[in-house]
Amino acid sequence: MLVRASAGPAFAHRAMRTAPPSPSSSSRVARRHRACARAATASSPWMASMTMIRKSARIASPTCASPSRPRATPSPSTSPSHVSHALQTTEDTPVRDADAEKSFDWRACWYPVCFTSDVEADAPYQFTLLGEPLVFWRDSRGVMQCVADRCPHRLVPLSEGRVNEKGELECGYHGWTFTGEGACTSIPQIEPGVGLDTALKSSRSCVTAYHVREAQGMMWVYPTSKDKAPDVAALPELPLVPEYDNPECVCQDIFRDLPMDWGTLLENVMDVSHVPFTHHNSVGKRENATPVNLELTSAEGVTARGFEGEWKEGPRKGKYGTQYTEFKAPTLMRHTLRTPTFTTLTVVYAVPTTPGRCRLLARFPFIFKAALPRLIFGLYPQWFSHTNQNAILEDDQIFLHKQERLIEIDRTVHGKSYAQSCYMPTKADVYVSAFRKWTSQIANGGPAWPKGMSTALPPQETSREALLDRYHSHTKNCKSCATALANIGKARKILRVLTFVALAAATGAFARAAPMKMTIALAVASALCAIVREKLNALALKMRVGPYPPPRRPPSMMESAIEKARFAF
Image (tube, rainbow, N blue to C red; front, side, top):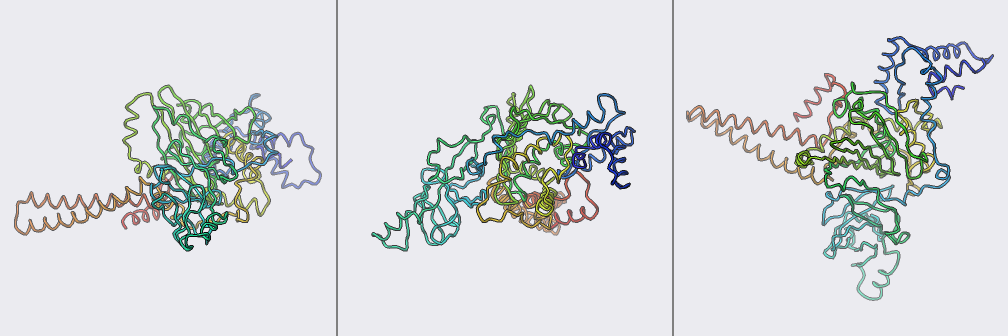
């Protein structure tokens, strides 16, 4: 009875009325049950307001309960039995039996790696997918190739090498070279002849090769070797976004390597109810929060392909109409809003790299009927938009990193499932529940990591700076941001020179009794150069590490002082 009572206070109240009392029940348990009954039938304005306050405090973290909406005096349509039925949504998510009985193949899917604009034409690109290091490069024809990032000679990473004049990948250790099919074409340590031919023909000199495709400005890899999947035409379709190809579509993209598990990221972006609270003063407002009633619309419920759902009211208190959500397993989640004047999407690819880490590739396509918004949208510098988008990602990055470790402790130490650890009685958690059921009942509990790899989460980061790092997780691998950061550095050097030159000129003009206007103009120019240089320094700092605290709460006196000191230095 106590387990079933977790569906909510109303369910507990109904269970108390129908279940016979146990002779062995203690008075403490009885008092607890009476408290649950009082909570279920509370109707005073004070209790209603306290319920909403608790909701505001808890909904920011997926591990916390999200109470149901405040209730007025119970009526026949809002009786405890009726409310309990509405609250049991997360436990009633259907999973297709045929898919639950199969073993999901994590390596039989296409995964996005990066945006093609961030790939250098003449240098290797390293990426880890499902725990396997991979290396990508463009051959002499400009075609992207991919092999395992380990030389068969002495197992050093090939990504530390170079792309040679023939468009082949050359190992940086001993100069062995490889084609996009994984064949070794050169071993400099062996003289030409029978010995070299024999070594080159040996399967042990080869490296595992993988299929690569480029589509919609992204690079994709299929993590099954070409030997086992030789026909690329027979492989599944890429999980693309059809709206992206609309000629009226403009799009903002961003990627980031995150200190959290792939599943933690996906359930976070599926959770629409956290936006007004977690992202208050960035992309949300607490005052816009309303009860969220999500529904699965997939005819077969949760399947190996994923699921679909809708939020009929939609965000901003229904201002833009119904929001449609789709999870296309195992990496794609998208929200879609359509209005008479525009269509907007939030598209997230969550790519599992190693346990406790993932790569986010987010796209924000906008389809405008009018040409002017598209023109203005296209003029916005990508690197500048990335500073704002990174800030939004950081709104919940710290507590998500900590949340998944608490869930991991519950699972490994206390033997609890996700549903047992997290109390999710509302329809706002329908997508999260469906995703977790897909993971546990269809996807074998999570990604298929290499045999022998530890699947435990890495130790929790102890500093906020490590969790809010932008340089290593984004900037240095983003061509737009890396170029902007380099240009800002050059501009600051020039401004430093101009500052001192103008100051020296102002001093000299004053000493020579030059016209006061000239002296003042030179002094003002020196000050302006110094101010602009400091502004550029603050912008450069935003490309290296995110600020704290997030916009949803004002900083304490100490936090404010530390933040000012950070910008000063």
